[in-house]
Length: 242
Length: 242
Image (cartoon, one colour):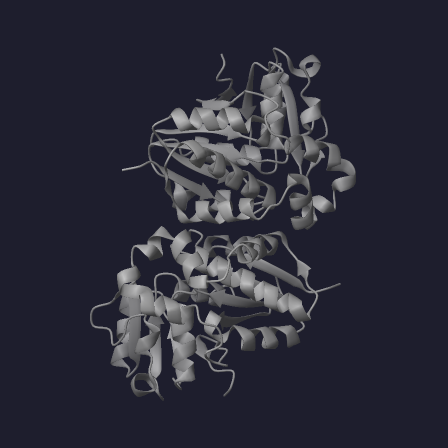
């Protein structure tokens, strides 16, 4: 029997999609996934995904750098927000980082707290998509693309990423494609020539923030800026290249 | 400010989409929505949506006809399953009906049990889609298309219906289109010339049942077989034509 390729459009649906022997690809395309990948590209030591703001502040006292946003805005007292441009080599090399975001790090923690059935988790982003595809194609495991969405609602950019990743995975391997994966493949096939235009035209939420986020969004939607594939080991995201 | 047009892809996400002053369009395209509309076309008196099998059996003792399925199969001791072809004039005219299904009637009950913020509920189906569009276009209320999905996962046929309905609604009125509605509009736009082919090619679940369901699926995907718009009043679905 072939391996399954499924897609979960919101963390609030995760329990209905979770299966054993699965690699979860967690995506928060704009911006947490790209920020995490960028931090590893620039040699962060490891990243602890943190749910609560106060918890992140405790890490600060232990010598960590702390990064975080709520509703897209940098948190007071934090070293960094959630822009990938924060995670330069100068800022992050060799550091331990605690990271809390509205959606992405919450989705990682959801999986972490339900990690009882031979489940692995990696971070998916447009900026690491080809390396990620090659890695996933080599594993003998089911794949579940977990979209972190927007406060448990479905969003366009993670859905588009899921469709693009499914499309790339299917170029090399056969998978049993489940219903939600067909849905995201249709979204990807209807997305036209520009990820940026597609995302902005379909997301009033992102369009309204374009003045502040245009540079970040362009970066987050650019393919193959890094070969890093961050993955969850115990309670930390670490580099697979280590 | 214009009225909102939003879409909820699974009952498990309903709490994140519910807003006051909203008409909910509940769809379980294959097959509960079409069965309910057909029952009203053939003059059922009213329908009580029921969550539990045993509860439906109690209605039988009170002189109701009872209809129901689990996982697509008619329940033992029930008068009817969930095929729209069960709900003929001969079978249903003037009768009271209690109805329980895997997904659709559960979604109705979810809304019924959270009915505290000036929320109305109507039943949407391809078989009543034009009449429904005209009705909705005339209301000064936000619209939320609630897909009943498959056991809380996202399905193709309800998503396609949501996209088609949004497309029709936008031909006449302006709405504030929210992100998930753009998503279903993209699905609809990529669906090609045949709803049947699109649904079967994208749903392994329905394809595997085609031998038994082909006639039902064709019927459920046919537009405008009825002008009935069933709506929820207290705990009963009744005809708007009454």
